[in-house]
Image: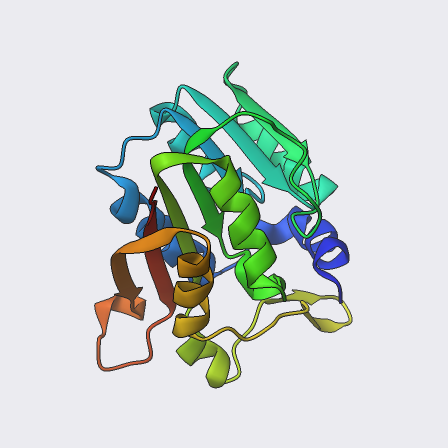
Amino acid sequence: MSPEQAYNQWAAQYDTNANRTRDLEAGALRAALADVPAADVLEIGCGTGKNSGWLAARARRLVAVDFSAEMLARARAKVMAPHAAFVRADINAPWDFTDQPFDLVTFSLVLEHIENLDFVFGQARQKLRPGGRLYLGELHPFKQYSGSQARFDTAVGPTLVQCFSHHVSDFVLAARRHGLAVADVQEWFDDGDRTALPRILALVFTAVG
């Protein structure tokens, strides 16, 4: 199922169903960005706002973007700060939903649904001020190799969301091609068990030049 269709359906239960990937990525984002200046923030893939409130509390301005109208409706209901704007947009198309620069761009569980990383990294870099940061938190490629992917249960059975496999080097090299240098790499494990497959890959890049 396409991401837009799937997340519109998933929205009603997204905050209440058991979801280790959702919860662990939220922790990864907070840890990775705890000391990162973030006056103006562009949040890509805000979903139901699981990270939006935390980002808005630290930001002078937050623009939160998602493709799913149903997810956005829930995010808007959670985060009503006057400096937070919620925008529906397809990040596979040119990012004309804002023309202002940002100190921080975040991707949370988004890029597994994106086939062309180069385009997205290029658009993100155009929105970043020099020295700005880009965070991405993704289902770890090792989990994808083992068969994990975004899914949720419905009355007729599990629904799988369209996903694409990207290797760690795919993220790093696509970022590098667009003037983004690796600043931090972290892997997050269920219950902190480093003998198991990591669940979340968290990368932070710096905009150079």
